[in-house]
Image (cartoon, rainbow, N blue to C red; front, side):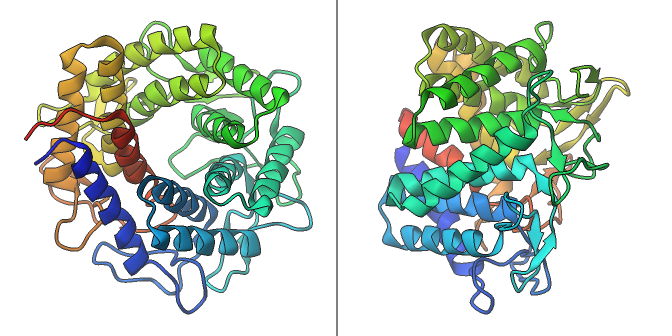
Length: 395
């Protein structure tokens, strides 16, 4: 196993080539909504906006990294489908799901989804300079600020009905708490806004990113444990929940990256400090094999003994980032061991892509290779980030 730029280029190409080969929907357009663990497509599966926005980001960023025209063509395919089928032309925003034919299915307005659409669109604009993509992204930014921004208490409300009226159930998924404000949605709003700022910088957008960084400082980062607090009501009363090791290590490097995008010296200093503190806290979730456990429930003293694909990808970046900031080889070894774990247990060397995860005994979890949440975003981004950071060669 190599730990060098070539290894990350190879894996990035392998991931994106898998998606090119197996996920293009040649019957209905765009990309298939679901592919099982044996690479069998489900023709009846709905198509999710988060999956499609992440595909758009991944092929756009992959093209920027590899200059492979096939990836640009796939990004164009994704943009065309997203802009044709997911846009709500009556009320604005994007639908949560469409049916296999591209007709609106679940029309709720989940702010997390709007954020990911902005993230993908801004990346696509960065490589194509297509004005329609930037206009689309700015429309979604306006929608978030118009409907989701809490002008009384600060932060962003989680979700709305089709016409932007309040919704009773605002959960992102069945496992989440039904609360008005979540760390996860705020993390991906700031990620999206920072990427939009990269291609269309304005003072108001910078102010929004600054405000979001301050919200994380004030509410989401636990200054005692340096784990992330996940759920709050509208007035910022916390609802105690699990520790999510994957979200910890993702936030550790991603928030610093956002502070760097706006070149805010004071917040860069703050978030360099937080990046290391949060990474150290996330190390509590590391197993001796280098894998990162999924979650820990403090109330029940229960560890969720699964190792999903996306926390492992984020672990490689987050721990490597902490090593770059400190020179502390504990973090370097954590990043390296996470990559070793991925290579040994998660990459499907026979059929391509990564498995959803493994259980404590290393049996494979049977969830989809492709689905509403299983996408090329976390693993492709980890490869791209390590390429940028130029890891030392270890054979």
